[in-house]
Image (cartoon, rainbow, N blue to C red; front, side):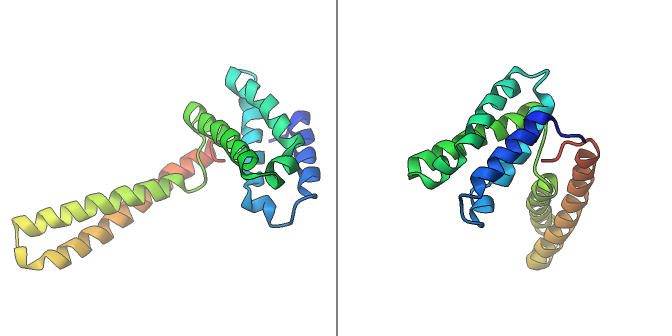
Length: 163
C-alpha cells in the first residue's frame, strides 16, 4: 500500500525526534507501534471522524516525541495514554489486531475448554485416570485452539487488518 504524504512526514518527524533518544528507546517506548497505528489511522481518516481527530494528535506526538519520552513520568504516561486510546479505537472500530492475536487468544480458550472437557470425561468414565484425561484435554484443546486461531489470523492478514 502506498503511504500518504501525511504519514511520510509524520514518520520522518518521529524518526528525527527518535535520533535524539537512545537506540533502544525506539522499541522500549513502542514508537514503532505508534507509527503502525498512525498508518492505520491515516487509512481510515477519510470516513472516520475519530481517526481524523487522531491524525492531529499523532502529529503533536511526533513533533514532541523527545519531550514526551525523556521528560518526567507524567509526560511518558500521557504519551502512552494517547497511543493506547488510538490503538483501542483502531482495534474496536476497525477490527485491526496485532499479529498472532487470535492464535494466542484461541489457544487460551482451547486449553481452558480442553481441561474442562478432560476433567468431565475423567469424572464420568474412569475417575482414576484424571491426570491422563487432563493432559489429553490440554493437548487437544491447545492444538485445536492454535489451528482455529491461525486460520483467523490468516484471514485478518489477507484482509489487511493486522497492525
